[in-house]
Image (tube, rainbow, N blue to C red):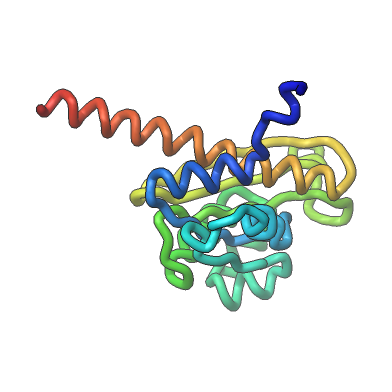
Length: 177
């Protein structure tokens, strides 16, 4: 049997990680259009960790539901780090979770793409224990491929960053013992 068949999918890794650490997660999804929650929901037992998701593909949802100021979108665009940060921050008011994650970006032509923000640019933001984690990545491929890669990357990004915090917590506990 090849190694490929033994590898777990990113959503499986995240679901296991969240369960093992008794953490919950919620998403504000723009570019992913519900794919984050959809992928995670394919894993048995996800109801223990997935609190919910708000699809905010349209600017009106970002503004009216998630309370992103129109001025911020006009100044920075709906696909920007600043808007993504605000989505993650405001999400917690609607869906309480240990981790509130947001994703925006450009998977298909017709958005706010520029030379410095090309098609495939994805913005991530998540909050854990009151701390923001941010990232900008560029993926290539069809709109579906970009969305899939973006979702998988967010799952891995969350695991990586929170593992560092938990490892630091364990190290501090050992020092104080």
